[in-house]
Amino acid sequence: MTIKRRVGAHVGGGLSSAIDNTILIGGNCLQIFAGSPRMWARSLWAVDIAKKFTELAIKNDLNPVYIHALYLTNLASDNEELVEKSIAALVMDMRNSAAISGAGVVLHIGSHQGRGWQDSRTLVIESIRKVLDSTPNNSYLLLENSAGQKGKIGSLTELADILNSINSPRLKVCLDTAHAFEAGYNFTTNQGLELWLKEIESTIGFEKIELLHLNDSKTPLGSGRDNHQNIGDGYIGSEGVKRLINHPKLAHLPLILEVPGIEGMGPDKENIDRVKQLLF
Ligand SMILES: [Zn+2]
Ligand SMILES: [Zn+2]
Image (cartoon, rainbow, N blue to C red; front, side):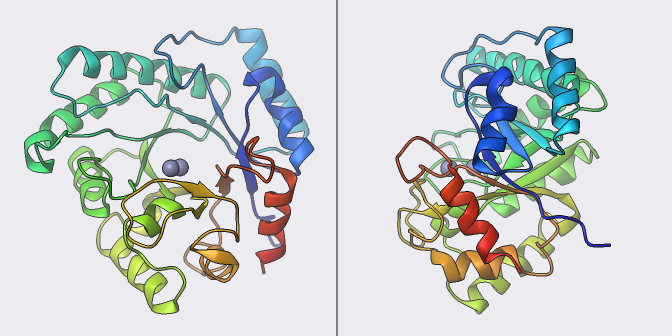
């Protein structure tokens, strides 16, 4: 039996519209925010609303469901209050994820603001431990790779350091293809993709990868600048995307798009269709 590949997108509209918006663009998995991504305020979804969402997701065969953490979090800040607020917001996202039987909360770890990984790793690791220790066992935290921006934590070796230090089955990884390309992994060639896979194997390991954020890149290889582009329209291009999503080591992973959309209104049917056409 072949399992249907999971292709979906980050959809807006909150919990109430997420299912409809996913069906509208032809997705079969999804990612949402559990509150405004640019505001700290977080609250728990009402039990009946979370239950209704979960039932509808199952009924429509939409899974997995991911939550993206808010953009304000920084677990490596030297501002203690900011770290505490980040932990509190993440705990809420994790509890909401458990409430909808979600597959995990995707996190941009944050920036060490020039202090370097060695000087910030203890704080980051302690913060993540706190989040895991105070959240349900059926909630998962997915660390996302960074685009190689100065100070931003999320190289493969940094992710591996965190994973190895914490060693929890509830801590996994989400790899963003645009970020990896912007950090210098060249998916336009076979060798470039193989190099990335080899580094994954020797750092985080394939079994830790839960999800691919599938985005093309608006900035060139190794730019160190995070800017997503529609599938096939960026520097990775259709051939690069095709090579990547069909690679035997990655072909089982769900694909979540976070592209601008043809009309600039976010991931759309056109982008999902492009991915479907590139799948073997
Ligand atoms: Zn992403
Ligand atoms: Zn990004």
